Length: 154
Image (tube, rainbow, N blue to C red; front, side):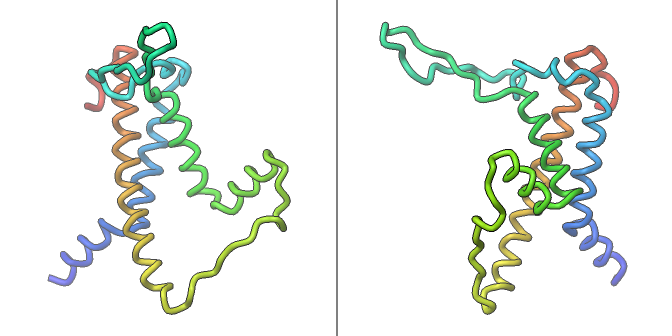
């Protein structure tokens, strides 16, 4: 009985969630040979494009909330942050923006709240990683459909 419980808990561990996400993004990265083909491909197959605002002449302006290429780039960026660390990613962003590391200050939480804060963020991170893993798998399958190898891996 102990092995079943341990196996179930291990399946839902943060480490395994990160590995599933990284594996899904690596699979996506290996499958998507021409990322530019993802530009202007809607995130959902039958997503309706709705007018979001009206131009001054009364005609509607249509706006697509993003495409698969944007998701592709975001998923790869998140994978790199997990693999290389958030601090390195923050340093790269600061270098691009020209922000000195000494200018950024962090607020330290009260020690009594650390465990509660940890569990809150752990739960949120697990949920986000599961969602991102599904998104990477969906993107991979949609790419295969778009280039005509839709029967593979579905």
